[in-house]
Image 1 (tube, helix red, strand yellow):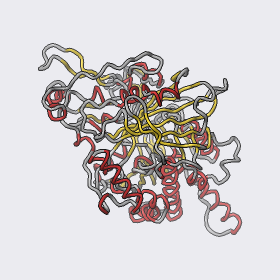
Image 2 (image 1 turned 90 degrees about the horizontal axis):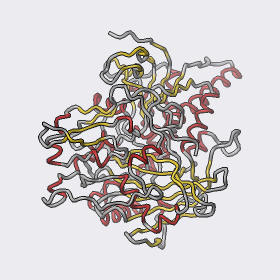
Image 3 (image 1 turned 30 degrees about the horizontal axis):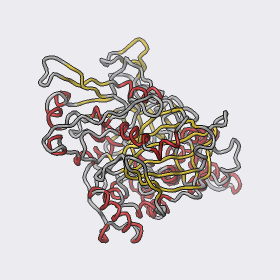
Image 4 (image 1 turned 45 degrees about the vertical axis):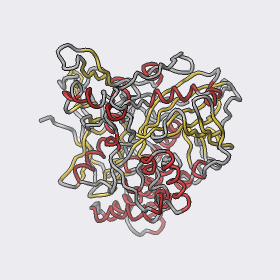
Length: 572
């Protein structure tokens, strides 16, 4: 058995995004205030806990792609003076104009009104990459031990009690054999482990399955595929927010697009975030998010924002869209779950940064109480769920609890359902309090059913001119993605024989389409039933988890690779 170093902490936070850093900063603030009060009154005992935060990216923010719209509500609660702090919060622009475009294949029209959930006055366009880096600096100043490049491999448990995190081994070759630089992953022992890994976190997924923490509905996901462009000054002013509906998606597929005007570059040009969100509960076995984004950019109404510009960055991220009834039990003996890992996202508003921060703050308050009492049991951590139910974040989640599920009946049904939600406090169409749903992958139809027994048609050829549109490999290059080539594959296919046999026949190998990074490839191979077999280009992976979510057989398990691997999003 491999000997592992054990490092003792009071609190271990897994994940360095808005939720994890919100947890860390708020916990440090609570401890600081407590200790100041003890010092001034002479009553009670000071707290000096050891707190660490681990992050799989090589640097904080490296896996957070620029270009989002942030409701500042939670950030103001976390750091009331964030607007005047030094260094200043990295805000790109305050939203000054927003509207919705209904796109067709030839153009589009501006909707006469902007639906209330898509109104963004008072919100801010941000670079999440910069924001995460800024929050990370504050956390470190407050004494949090931040360890980027250290992914968690597995939770340490004693029965149902979480006792810490084992880090990923480094220095293994692709066969799992030790290389000369082998380093076994250490164990971070903790009284409280807080999971803020982002969407479909690998440790969270295992814990939810092992302890049966599932919500009333399975979680439903979408994928956001985005690019950051540099365009001529004045072409897309900072603070402009445009959402799109319709083309290139059909009326049966959930989703929509966006164009956000970001800040100016040093050369005086504007940055633009352009992207599309698509439900990973689509019936289409040939769904390709990357392709849909390229098609969207070809629309004249979208292309006019990008003309004369240059694509700088590409990326993809999965989003937890199931809402309140898809959220898992988020507390237990020695653990809490916050942010995207716990499903804190408002899919109706297409926003999650503020909910991630707020859920992290409530996790911090629960942890602070446990540090004072010494009680980290499930009975004590249940106060986290109670805090959530009495907070504005719960009220917001309740209003969108049935939003995504309504689109399972198509675009018209989804819009009617969304209208009911607006008028009746989140109730679904015909006053339904809780719309039922299934796991997203179960909605995928077999090729013969979806295409009417004619077989999968060849898609319309998309012009990939390298100026406005790009192939997947070019896009992946623009993500800065890198992994150590000679390491165990972090995309574990438990039944690989399915890929060259049953999956070919039933679904036409959808992984080669739905992966936005060309990770999965069907290559020619003699001796197989259909003359092809699966090739996994794991080094292309942008860590979106789409394969783990959408595989119709659920035989793909995304696990964390060596520390520092993955996309490298820079300060744009």
